[in-house]
Length: 106
Image 1 (cartoon, one colour):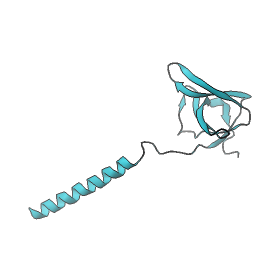
Image 2 (image 1 turned 45 degrees about the vertical axis):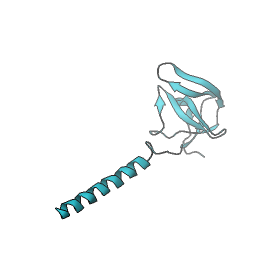
Image 3 (image 1 turned 180 degrees about the horizontal axis):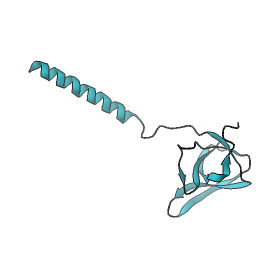
């Protein structure tokens, strides 16, 4: 009986340690945006995107060659609107995915 109690205690401690490790981890690991540039003459940069109503909260207009970031396959793209980081001002928003290009070019 005593050996079974020790084994059970060790199992509980292992499960608890694993659970603490899982809880301590973020739900989705942060991934730095991949360097890209705006390849359209101009691209509206919105604060939010809602799948039923589209983009909202125009922040500013970005122009050809502006340095931005978006990691393909990691940062979301909703109906062609890509979550994008503006390296110039240091904020996140949404631009049309087709306006992103030149990945890794700088």
